[in-house]
Length: 224
Image 1 (cartoon, rainbow, N blue to C red):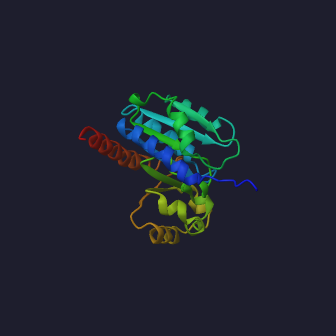
Image 2: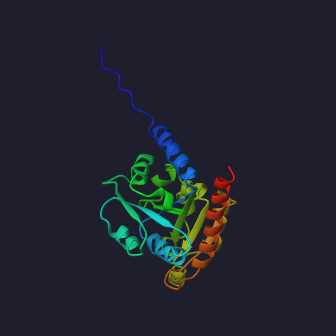
Image 3: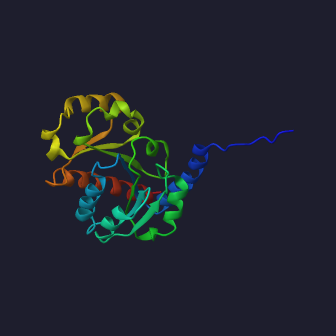
């Protein structure tokens, strides 16, 4: 008789671990962002500017996901906030178990905002919940306005979408009208922002929006 091999559903197992992460983070009143994009969108630069604006008002920690190296984590560490590096060594996304391990290395009682910068990829990260309150997708004008319809799941699942590198749009054929039409066809209620890290454009708006999200979660936790 031949051996029957049972393959566990990867997404189901991830969801179980993610639920543990989410309960822990909710108990601590930590607002959690899953920051996603393709490589080169400028999400690390954007995160640097957000941290610089908010770190004197709230406690921020970052989990950095990369296939290899600590280059982005070193940039975030220079901002003076706690950072944990996860190297996936080939995997194209972070998962619940990776985040669970990283949380064990953080002092959760001293965190208001946790940003998880996912591996640069417009496909896999959208499929895996990791305990976040919101998924935020960053897309740059240099990538083209056709990405929402090419990678719909990323844009369907995001609670906010940031169009970055506005300072370069004049050098591209990026069509904002088509971009926003496609976004709304996939996700009618998503929050939209436009930014330029070079010109510091749109950073204040994102920070104000984030502060409201963080305060709202704190209130819910305190009123339970």
